[in-house]
Image (cartoon, rainbow, N blue to C red):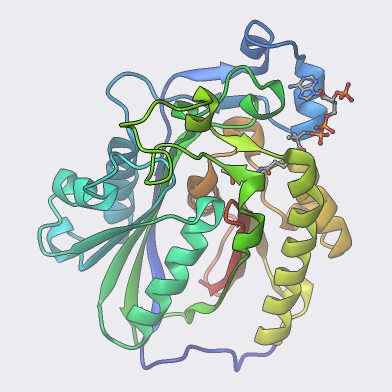
Length: 336
Ligand code: ACO
């Protein structure tokens, strides 16, 4: 392995804490057979999903974010007072404004931070780490709290059997701290978008194009729409491309990476991409079975699980890779 890979500033942006939170209420595949014409067999074989968590009364994107954030702060042994920056990646924000990040700031008492939201659908968390990498490695900030959080079930179309079975709610959080002695931390980030394909994954209302003040010609515009077939092949292609880009840029071989943590969009998409990359299945983290697709929350939830299950040791290299609405895609290479 090439040990010379390093950061682009005087400080290493090191992940010092992780946390996650999901609602208690769940929807199983058996539950879905009472909602739409489907079966456990179809959902399991086509998506890999068995269960997803669904926000109940009083649970929102901000409350889930705050719970994940508190766990990440405890894991990093950092006081909320000391947090300097909060980014919440979400496409299901608490409100149109203020930002979900401002709600989280208030809920956890991080009164010295500045806070904003980032909307990049399933790529939101990797975009967030890419931003924070710059702020921390240059020494501009000593730490940042990056959260991916969604309540997708609040914009799910439960009449559409192809999409409604996919989505779940949850939040994951990490603390990134500046270090001069610690491990390299986030060593490479890459991000991309293609706005011309926006219509394949969308929720059109309510925004300035379809404001709440005017009745919608189609009430479904307020719900998520995905062209699953269109996105399927593209997702595989982009994931393969971006993983290869990361390996090449960092001078790594595929086997140098201890764990690949992809956005949990569909187990078949992940398995196809892993096959094309010649990755052994034990290197690719999959937990979609338990949570479904939680968009921006899926990678930080998976990373938290990996850390808590002892799958990542000091010195290990982990690669996070995402693809989603926008279209957007991106990746981070992290040495722990
Ligand atoms: N139960 C039973 N049958 C179903 C279901 C269901 N839940 N859903 C669809 N079918 C049927 C279809 O009607 C179709 O029947 P037909 O052949 O008689 O027309 C058949 O199954 C096959 O449908 P496909 O759409 O070809 O199924 P596919 O294998 O592609 O799976 C899926 C659909 C799961 C949506 C897949 O395409 C996918 O995961 N795509 C990517 C999803 C995605 O983009 N996720 C990330 C974006 S989310 C974000 O950014 C927030």
